[in-house]
Image (cartoon, rainbow, N blue to C red; front, side):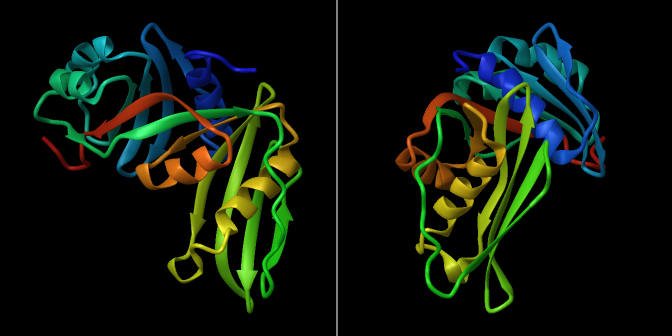
Length: 207
């Protein structure tokens, strides 16, 4: 079972596995991941808003991201004008298997991967309908890129993807970072919110 802010370290390790980035590097205030993509060069995961002012001043290179656990008001107060804040996200966790979900008529499910990353694709008539992936690190399954196409929403496909990913990963604990829209789905599946997470970045091309 992952408890408290242990989930931050568990999540960032699994996220790095899922995204095939460099392994996270522990920092005094959290973690750093060297992502190396245009617009997303490096990512800092901070445990608390108290760390934001120093990081916001020292790490304000274009393409840098901060994701900070804690109060949105406190995080925003620590940012400099170089940073653009995004909508609040939610660090969530669950223990044990996810509820089983039947495949709706007209849909097919494909599971690929042999670990530590698995992917699930739900299709209809040969066209993608929903998908997601999971990366496993240190025994924790981190769910990532869960998405249902607009024409196929409200049919339980998100729950289906989550169940099949959890089944493939077979981990005793799971973590994810949810949007406001996704939080309702995951809460209904038994996930709990461990912390609000406030994202911010310095846009590529910024001075």
